[in-house]
Amino acid sequence: MSGVEDPAEFGWTAAEAANLRQAIRDADLLASAESLREYLYGVDDETAPDKPYRYLVIAEAKSRTGAGVAFFDLLIAGGAGLHRAVETFDPAAGHPFAVHAQWWIRRAMTL
Image (cartoon, rainbow, N blue to C red; front, top):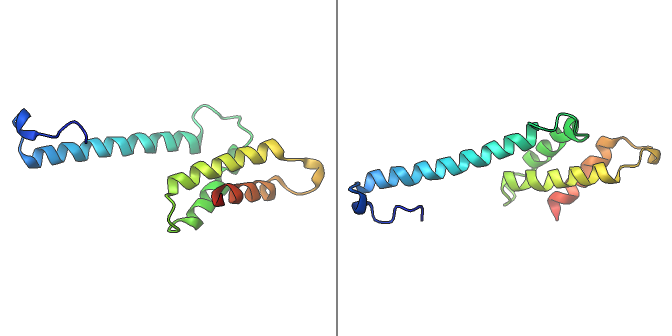
């Protein structure tokens, strides 16, 4: 559990222990949200080549919510696809990067 198995040991009521458990879960969610925000908005990677195209990952993840996969997991997979698109893009092929990136993002989210 979260370290509060016996609330009587600390002199807490069951309601106080439940509130503490909820606060711990909320703190875990907040930490996840902060790491997601850093990934999406890039605190340290202002010059990353994929930064202008992260909206493609978000849009594709939004369109796939409700299919049984968590939104956060879709974002992680889509981010991996976007990085793969950056690695494999060939400007000589004649198609825009956004088209190439969207293909890799969709592929990563479906695997």
